[in-house]
Length: 259
Image 1 (cartoon, rainbow, N blue to C red):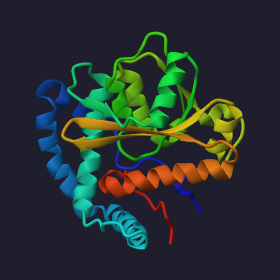
Image 2: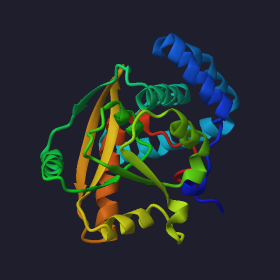
Image 3: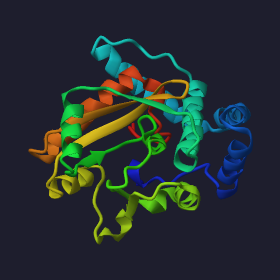
Image 4: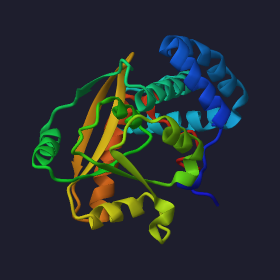
């Protein structure tokens, strides 16, 4: 049985993403977002699997909300896919075009202050990310010349986007390391927590959430690294808080929860 983290990208194609890129380059984000209306409609209309997993996610989310006296989410599969499509547009602009108009703010708290202190002291940190919000949009923030970001990913699972980034990206300070070359298999995401602990540095989970139009807000939380279990607990707590606030920005369109 294929686990959720082993599912390869679907629906992406080299020609399609290149076409979207050139539409953006020539006409800008507004025209591109108008163009993706019919694309989203086709995905929802003919994508039975997409509708199914979106409904299952909404069921799980609202079950959690009911148990915790939170507001029930009533978004549709169309709205869910539309948010994802818009995030892809912003992702293209952020990764490959320094002229994009994305704006950012930070959810400033003690965890953010701890991260700022590390940066000021030129120390490293390990970031845990997920398909919640649009973490790649942070590429719109200019890279500092003396800062390096090492990203670890299974490049075989997202080859189309990976090749697109290699071809068009305008940033040089991020180095991507294929996890396939690390010499052993591990059951993600627990393996990620173990790897983070092995790095022996502060661990943060981070998300970049769209809060309207071309505005994003960055959230960070420092994770207790006492054990893999405490790390997983802190990570899940962080995701749960943000998902209930921004439910349409959970961009995992596969059988994540199982039945």
